[in-house]
Length: 235
Image: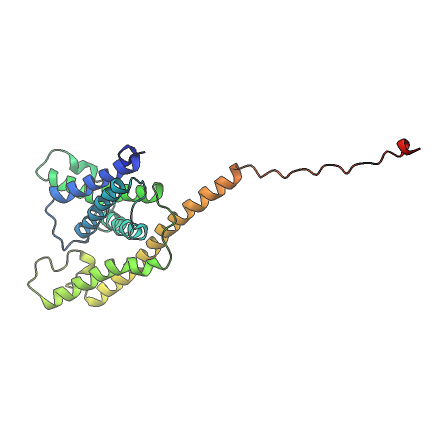
C-alpha cells in the first residue's frame, strides 16, 4: 500500500503544517526555546514525511531522535502553559483583535504542535525504540540552551533579549537563584524524559501482553492408546 494512503503520513504532514504556520504567523526570535524546538519539530517531521514517501513505510526515521524531539516540544508546551501563562486558557485570545495572528502563532507553537507530536509518539510507529541511556543525550539541548543564554548575556551585555525567560534572568534575584531554577528544571526534565521513554516501552509491553492473552495456546497432539492384546483370541 502506498504511503500516501496511510493515516500516519497525513498526521505527520499536519504536524509540519502546525509548526510551520506557528513559525510563520509569529515574530518570535531564535533566542526563544519555543522557536528552536518548533524548528526542530518542523525539520524532523518534514524529513519523516519525505522518508515515508520514498520508502513506502509508516515508520518514522531515526526513532531515538524522534524521542528527543518529543521531549523538547513537550517541555515547550508545559513550560509555556504552567510557568509563563500560569495555566490561563489560551482560547479567548484567538478571537478578533489586534494581536490575533500572534496569539494564533503562540497557540500553534505552545499547544497544538506539542499535543500532536505527543500523540504521534504514543500512537504511531516505530515503538520501543528509545533507550534509558538516551536520556542524558536528550537533556544536553535544553541544559545547553540555559548555559548558552547565561554565557552570551555575560559576554555580550548589549545583546537584545539577553534573558528570554524570567527564570534565566539574574537581574533581580541573582545568579544563585537562577542556578536554583535551572537545577529544579533539570530534575523536572529528567522525570519528563523518563516518562517519555516509559510511555514508549509500556505501550509495547501492553500490546505484547494483549497479544499473549488473545492468542490461544498451541494444541499438543494426543498420544494414541497402546494396542491391547486380545487374550481370548489365543485360547
